[in-house]
Image 1 (cartoon, one colour):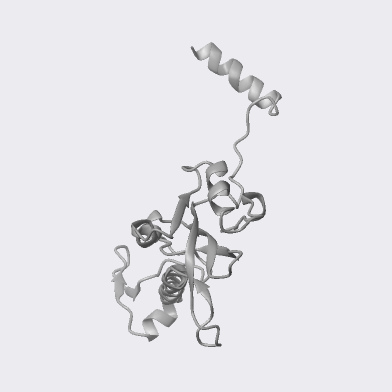
Image 2 (tube, one colour):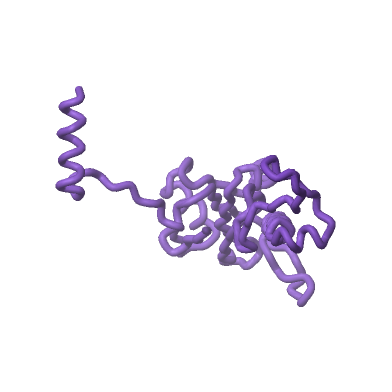
Length: 190
């Protein structure tokens, strides 16, 4: 067994192209994804844009999460001297017995939130009659789709990428948009 491991290791070091490399998933294939047929909402005025159902709430949840994470990391990204001036808790050094402001964990203001709720990204195409929209939604947490997956209205269509076949999705959506193609309807999310 050990001899096989040494042989495998030698081949891997001497000929790295022989071993399969692991690559990151393409940005168009990451996360949980839905293709949906939903109603359009909004009046089209500046404070009420026309948008597909479920998108406004889902993106607001995601934006609030990012804002909260940045605010939380900003409070953690304080120098010990500034923390002491703000009255932050102090810690006693076991070796010297002196007190100093507890050092916060450095976090960048650009750090992504630990949990990423809500809809991270989306794209839409209006149906041929202009009354509904075909929407491609992306979320890191499948719970972001719980409301749309629970929608039982007969005119709403929901397909999960990776679970439903591309042929089925395209056939159904072509009933509403004659030139619909999944190849031209990709959404990237980081």
